[in-house]
Image (cartoon, rainbow, N blue to C red; front, side, top):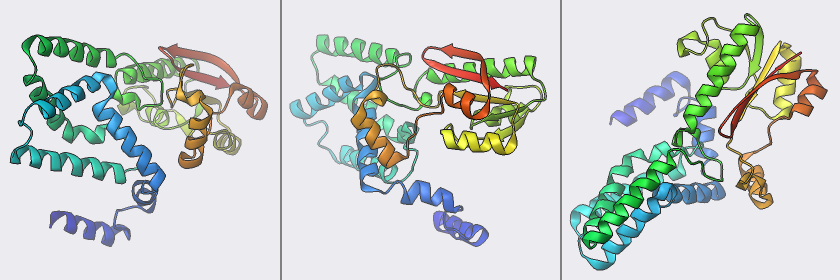
Length: 288
């Protein structure tokens, strides 16, 4: 009843059942494309049962399923139903497909891993626990060879520290300048409450770093400075350099490479003045 009342209130105030046409399109219509749903399901399953050495926990669950009847109870049936329903919900809806949407099912997953481990011989159990814990710890620092949200591990720390370094550089060299960049850095420069800057900069929002969007925004608003940064994890050895994968993300996710330094110089007459790098991520400052 509360959900229904909230939807009715949204509809009456905004004219849209989900509050905003763009939000509804991205999180419902866009995400319900069958190919995108398939990719989202594969990504969800890999994150739950494979990444960060969780494949070891998956093997423990399979071992317990094959060796005992511990999972064949009404309680586990209910837990499994909740797990599957939540997985289906966040696979079908939500254009961003962020892994944090899976947090509600992680307690069920780890309880299942512990149950599977309890069925192993003591020596096996101890060895598997050590490797499992070590692998999850390594996952905090090791970035996979494919795009992933920086928030999934400590890559987010590098992301923030790079943006802080660039903000300090801008405050020291160009106070009061008009700066073009994409969210979330545009918000960091605009709002001192986020603690990146002491005084707000005049900000030109570029939406993203696709060449056409950056060039159009810069020609329209004439910023003094352009700041670009790595929005996607693209190491040297990555799926982002694999032609079939690039074809898929271009066709189904509107992927475009970020604007290059050569394009910025040729189209906007701006040159790189400073580039910060940290563990495979970067942020770059251009001026006229």
